[in-house]
Image (cartoon, rainbow, N blue to C red; front, side, top):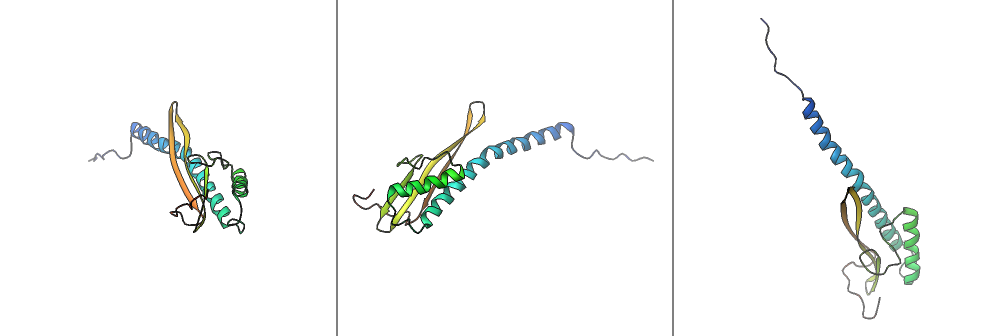
Length: 138
């Protein structure tokens, strides 16, 4: 007597649906990873600039030049170190606790036709992040 076994496995339609979902998330990852990679470079540039021995005594122009060099070697394009305001620039604050460098920016990347991905990033390096600026100090 032959017994009938139940069908096992995934159908072709099920496989195609699973591959579409996996492909969508892989595509999203391919679009997001460069944004996070650039943010990692921004963090590293600000942290290395803040760790530089000349950091606390350097004037604003010298600091912006140091940051600009780090950005150029790391291929950072979302932030202009010469812009002095957020978003899109590097803010340098001199306080009684020290000098802080901060960025607050949005990275945009194309997803589909007219749909874009937007990721918001912010980072502060050096000094005390919540320190209030000194009167008259940039």
